[in-house]
Length: 498
Image (tube, rainbow, N blue to C red; front, side, top):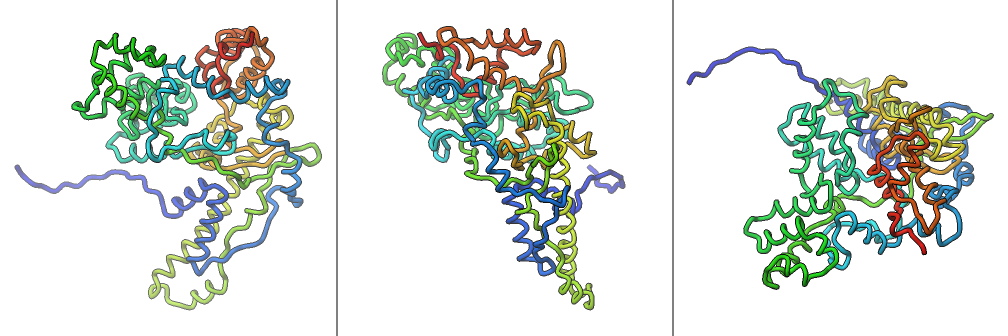
């Protein structure tokens, strides 16, 4: 064995401190941005608050109170006109009865409500404080936690990219119910990912905490948690058998039949059932933060002379500026004698430029959204056009990651209500004849179909898919099922009224 020295060259990509600051500021919400700005002003003597409010696109800045008062209520925004019939029918559709949701859960491989799981400490329930408006916030805690584990693993750049796609495909419950291919279609990867690479990425994500994330069904989620337990755990094998072979009997709570099928002692069955109860059917819940009670819009959309225009919210338009008195005083000093002060002056200059750049980027993205989705402001969700991050990035000459940061946790107040930027993004669904439509507009059509159905003969997911096919919209039955669940509408068998 010999030791030697050798010379070599390699290229490394590093992000400058100013760029790191720009990225951090851009991805902050309006509230967090204000806190960050105030903290910087308090800790950096070369900064002071700037109270100047400049109109970004017009000399006349709209009144946010007037825009807000003109907007309809949240209830009116969330319910399409086709569903507003009489009180009983609308309630049955807009908010499914909890017992109906439980019954639907049994149809989709879920244990009964009476067979209660023990809630994991720290887990949150989304039903504790009533319904939340889906477009008022977006839960990102789970995905951030998974990414932190991904970046800590020793993976190649391509493996990390594939895992990122899988993480983005997960729903808010941490389940992989959507086809990964639909997420792959929204990003450009060269060469394209193979099936083997995506399967490996799914397997990698499933090794992360919380155990059970990335499962395609409740049974698979519970089995993943059983596999992670000590092989000597009492009742482990019997619990696995119950979940894999007798989930239908468990869902009926027919414990006598279950014991006969298992051919085991009553104590052994109790042990296995107790183990299943301790499993977590919703492992992602502990990472889900509650939606905020209120939001501060970053942008106000108003109509002037028949044209919709986006302007920065004047209440958060104030930024920071250099304190000229301190800057002039420091110019007379030797900078080499005060390296810390020199660094603070440099950081102050970066902050002033990055704040202006943040406002400019957000406004450009907002104006593009308003122009692309103009029909939405006149007709609602049914008129939403397909839009993905890549479309905005190409049009504005930005990187997709920049657009993603500029739309995350950002809101705009419009004549139709207050919406998150992400609300205007929806993937494209092909049509046999005519232009493609967005997934959001298809969900609106499905909602309208269900609202107009005969209560004695409700439409099944297969029927809805067939009706959409007649309209030229190519959509699979499982996609209809997913959209129906997003609308919180129970399946046909539970909507039937004799």
